[in-house]
Image (cartoon, rainbow, N blue to C red):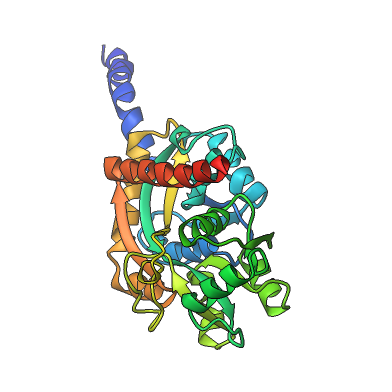
Length: 316
């Protein structure tokens, strides 16, 4: 009689135990954080700093995988089409809504699952240290005196591109907007004298500021950044433009809530780490943790703001 009871008991226990075991198993292998750009850019810098501490709070290793192409579209699509199992994630920023606005991708950020925002950074206008532009007043004055002559570097289809357009609209100027590629490419173009200034989030430019190779002449922020002493905001020059770069993690649509919970728990713990906060501050990044509906609301607000910039451009 007993030999028939054992299989019966197993049949009762296994169906109940399997989901619990599956949930407890995540993660059981390396988790890829896809950065949709090459190494050295602002997203790459922020993500590598994140994983340095995140991996101390996560059961398995998280690694950066650079998948560059089409201004971030290639890497975004890779994650969107990946299995929703928590092993392929997207580390992206404010450019994600831009791609859809400019029709560079045929899907919206809403077709991914926002996991959490982990940091935000200022964006600014950078010139060589020997530039005649000491501040934004000098820059704007010359742009008005010589319409279309200042060579302004951006990556077409990126936040920098929309930032340049917003700057033109709000300051009443005309720039010679040049497609100078990603962060390191723009820096090389400025060093080589191929452009006069460029738009970039502040983190990847920190090394050039510290070496006094470049100078920041203005930031698109609500308030001045302690990490950039003496640098004024665009608003202080009468230019009503605020464009922060917000860095967050996204998962494929349909990723289970228990997996998202594990990820968010580790991300939240990482963002509370004082050493991590200091490391990001040294790169002019602010640690800001937001998840759930609050993060979805922030993404929607970004999308509306950036769409308005494109709409104003198209009316011309």
